[in-house]
Amino acid sequence: MQTVKQEVTSLLQRLPESSSLEDVQYHLYVIEKIRRGQERAQTEGVLSQAQVEERLGKWLAKP
Image (cartoon, rainbow, N blue to C red; front, side, top):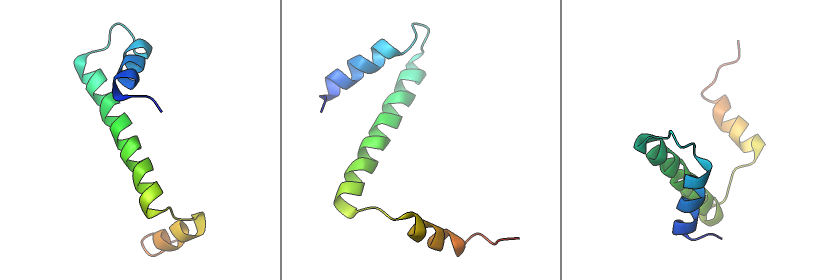
């Protein structure tokens, strides 16, 4: 697993030279959200496709 500094360095190398500070901030935001989601999945578990469909079925009406 990469350190935060390594991850940021890797991100900066992948972004085009014309990237703005907002572009960098957005990509860092996305990386952090993914990391938090992965940690949450490890600690709380995940839902199966059937469980997701059952939960959404209560909200989505089929025409």
